[in-house]
Image 1 (spheres, rainbow, N blue to C red):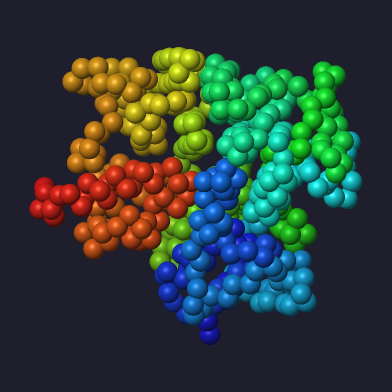
Image 2 (image 1 turned 60 degrees about the vertical axis):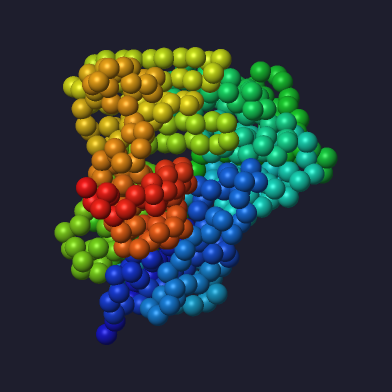
Length: 479
């Protein structure tokens, strides 16, 4: 009798798990239940969609399809009966499982402000989380001249930059004295604010919103300092909250997220949780790379490919790569720690760099602006490798002496172990192997390795490596 695996959630984590299970074959039935009516899509690319740089087909993810996979969209799971081993859906169905995986994601936080505390949000007030949210924002933005974004974190800034790219007068309201406080320090955030101003985004910092008044003509956002800002559209980007309601109602152990062990098992060994809703070792993750790594571990365990597989989180790297902005941040910028601190700032050019080094290893870094060393810095941080003796090559992106670790000027000088795609953990060596296996175009390499299908930030690097491979013969590559 075949095993039945039910996945609740067809987002980036759930759809990836279905693909991982399908790719491994075996006699099992996989049922994916997605509350959203759409195909699975890349949530990270929604800001690019908002900016008008891509269309909706470009953000769709490849889904597992064919024998053994039953995908149902627009279906909400209302309850889990652990004793019977079934899930109940809003269309009255009951689906049995041998193993259940919760990939319920997270929901946008709507602040408890006057004007937003009713049963539904006003038409001109939209959270920025889902594809439907993006569609609503674009519908209002089509006839708008101005927009406000409440929240100066990563997604809020991406939304503001996307709307500014469409010609709207965009403003960001943030209660903290500086932007992206989880990833940046005050000095770096000040340079970022200047860059945003040059791109048409005004920032209002260290001030809280006290109320919202919205009608058919526009939105007024009242602030704690007595000011009121008006716009045609208000976008909410006030953080997310793991969607744990289903797990909690089923009696699973829940804190901020659904508690899971190293195999991603919940307090019920027949149920796993992955992605935004899962809390592993006290930590939540809102990034795609950990979610996809978790999906791989669950697939390895469930299929028996590697029953000893365990999830080991890797250091997180945050990228903000909107038009006109290039930012990479890693480590905790607020932890003074011990060791060396190196900084460089050129606000007029929108450039800021800060490195923290302890025992010859990078423990934190912020790189804002055009810095050719960003790939090298990410590699050193991700792998815990020793930094070069001359730190200036990392700080300024230029080589100073023979010992400097400047980024490779050509893929030929890049080590095979270098990670090109952080989201999918694809190395240069994997891309070369794929090319040798006759994948001779960028699209073919992407399809085979998944490189570039996460945040998209490595797509140019993938294209560069494929271009280099097309210019040299196999003997030269092998050497």
